[in-house]
Amino acid sequence: MEVLHSKTFKNLPNYSLEWGFGTWSKDWEEKDFAIRNRYNREDGGFNVRGSAEIPWIDFNRMVPESIIEKQFSKKELKVILIASFKQLIKNLFKI
Image (cartoon, rainbow, N blue to C red):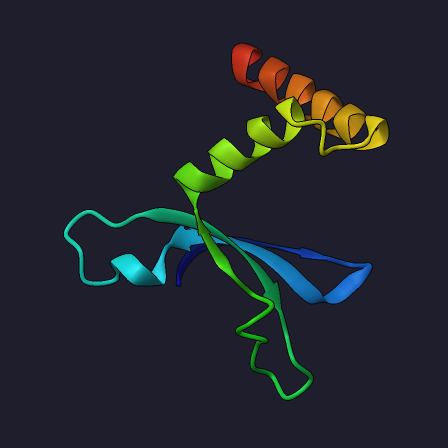
């Protein structure tokens, strides 16, 4: 993956999220945007099997379909709703 942005988590030292261009589109003129869970190994590399890349278009389909199919708990839906609402307000008012 050609990583453009990443986020680490203090309480999960060997885990991060990465956004960038998918490995499968490396040689394409127009690259596919993707997201990846990254699980680092203690030797400095990362767990390839546990660090899957997902095309952004698929990720965007997975979330609403999971909501429609009732795969999220009420607590998970609340987190998604609050985070989405806060970001929407920031985007609308350029905060």
